[in-house]
Amino acid sequence: MAPRNSKKPTWVVEKERQRSGDAPETLWLFGIHAVRDALMNPKRDKRRLVLTKNAADRLSEAVAIAGITPEIRESRNFNVPLDPQSVHQGAALEVAPLNWGSLSELCAPRGADPVVLLLDRVTDPHNVGAILRSAEVFGARAVIAPQRNSAPETGALAKTASGALERQPYLRIQNLATAMRTLREMGYFIIGLDGTGDYNIDEELAKSAHMPIALALGAEGPGLRKLTMDTCDIIAKIRFAGDFGSLNVSNAAAVALYAAAQTRG
Image (cartoon, rainbow, N blue to C red; front, side, top):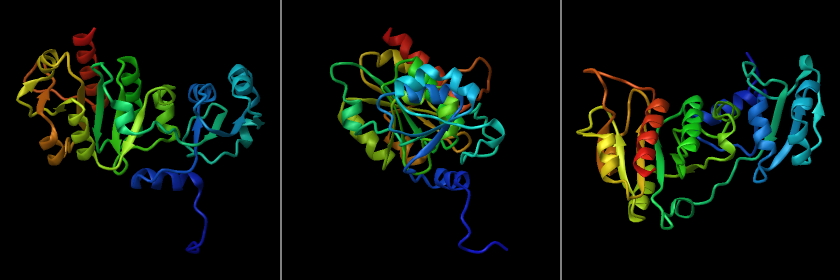
């Protein structure tokens, strides 16, 4: 049996933080695309860069822009605290989490009709990464999730987001229902997405084309919590061609964002 004071690997600690929602002081981004976009993001606090020679050649322009000196390692001696299953492509960057500011600052309409996403218990970093990509493509103002029971900023999330994490605001707040009430006070109309909804999302988005919109999505399986549903203005569903349909939460977010963009184009 291991002694109680045995030190856990850093990647194990990161996974435990993911489950608890605690924000790490720093995190490791990995993969060519995620590292390149972080290097080129002036808002990102960069601490340590580890590259293989091949990755250094591919990232030379971004490294020069960031003004950071990389540590060059052999691929067989790439001793960076990552999950052993991480596909790092010879590139890893230690950074501080991004600070997107407050909800009121980030989501204030300011004369526009923005769209924001609200994620309720969406804990899979791959789903959140895909949602951030869609949010960036369709111009969402922010993706908002609670500190607890949501996917924190991690290397896996950043890799799935393929650079969107550096540009698309991902705001984690203390309480989702409180944030929803704050958005309503700002003039947002809040639509929850659920297969049991009495309304069709495309029709409701067309009706609210000239209003700030918040789209609330829940985790696959349990869906939106009752308090979240009760705090929405309406519950709508994505119309399916057959009698029954089901979408992955990241796909549902992409469909809803596309529908919203169509009404505001």
